[in-house]
Image (tube, rainbow, N blue to C red; front, side, top):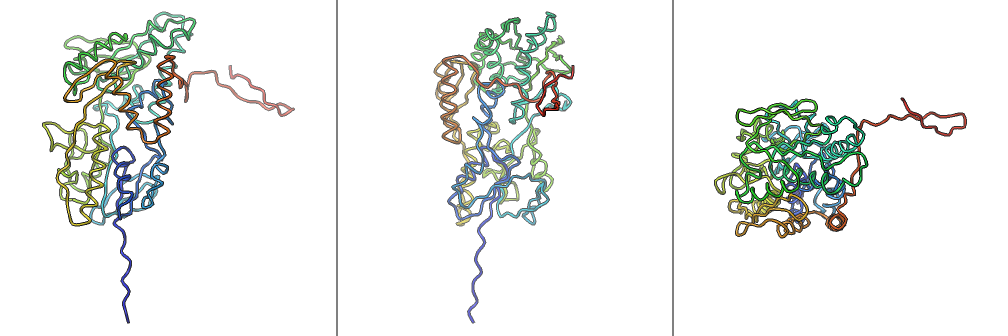
Length: 450
């Protein structure tokens, strides 16, 4: 009697998180002899670098989001699960999911990114939204445009100025881009749209705790960014710490001086912390975390004593190159996703790659139309040329062709008209509530509660 050899189960790769790192790992495993499962609590990949443009009405959410199943549908070895990982058992190589199911893996890639960090003041979150999700962007958009609408109706000069005061906390790339975009809105885009309020009286305040905006950038580019913001009408306050955020006010300290600013719109761009998966990995694998909760990884992006578990993207603290950890930016996550995909395939053949090495192609930040700063390493640029580089770099990293086309057309039209086509106030707003009463004729009649 001949014993049949049982079919060999494909190597199971589970990727947690559909951001840049996770998605590029999955894409690069599409033709490998593995079974890939991508788990994410959202069914789409979000291009976070342009999220601030959703928050300021330049783009719509669908312009910068791509359904994961659509992006990966040609990967016949890949499945997508809409779920959330709640626990991990490294010994059994299983994951617990929010749907009360378990998922087995041979190799695990965790790329769950980061969330807002309020430095122990989580009570500020409801008053000062951050910018990491579509919902965050829509809430910011609602607050920004609602402020202009309320200022239009307000007759009290003091209260009107409160509606026209915008405070952005944090002078990194997100804060700079938000402040610049709101400055363009108030001073160049919406002034002719209102009849009773002069939006050019807006006060836009960018608060940074360090001595300059864009701290990771070379000092000369930080200075040029601040000059460009000032020209747009933004007031930049460096060496300033926010000590309290209350209803309609921000309290700040600069040296021995304390200032309270009355403002209806307060936006948070000051810090990030790792997702809760970092804490779960630390508890279950013993891996060390940094102060922001990011996983300290080995030179090959694996976890210490767990060579089959990788952490990549914003979740990873990679300190094996240069004198500081790699920054949490999209190109780093893309490169790490591609590296891990190749590393998995090499390990299956009994080989290993060398340590991960990131080729830094530079940093970019946009301040406004025709204004940006770019550090390419070998050259540093600002102004219109830097802005063009920023435009084409962001188009390049968009996932789908139709997103690239739509964003290019939208940007081109906005450049010509200086318009913003997605200026919608959605969600809860202080508007007159309506109800519908059915009459005898079954025809709806709209009435007011007031």
